[in-house]
Length: 214
Image 1: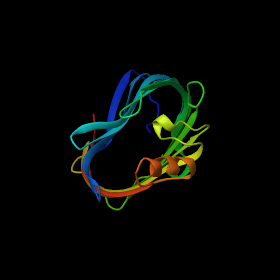
Image 2: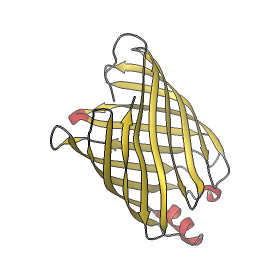
Image 3: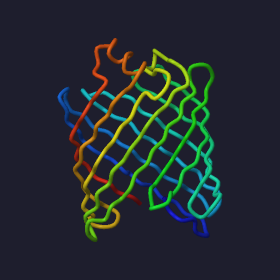
Image 4: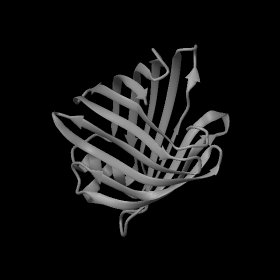
């Protein structure tokens, strides 16, 4: 998160651009966000996804209008599109994002798109400075769905939690390689759907990548 300042500016941040390896193989993934606008109203773009076995997997893109309600907080509203193995899905999005007490970056977004498609996503991260250049970053993501949607492998209730820990070294403020570990777990009906498809509801992987912004 960045404090709102006068003028017309832009910022693009690739939080994660990484390769990963687990018991099932290897792949690549990304998580990026950017904004373009002024001190009160901005266009926000957020995207994440992965590639494995030589093909693009699940991915998403949010296009949002952000309106500042304080120097550190935005209300956002717009659309989200999910693509990948499951049928494509476009939904409305509304939420908040900003800097919580103790400098936690936080975002909560509700996605609404008709029956079986309501979902809440919550993300939090924190940057712990170990030195001027060495930074430890824990992250946590959780998803809650209102109904079962078997085509997308989503069950009702708390279905997915992902926790990560990445250690990066800032060669410059704009560019930092990192290594880390990510654990992902599915719960309840979502876990049952993945077991029925022959997939494990748990996954752990080592990652290595770069974080950069411009």
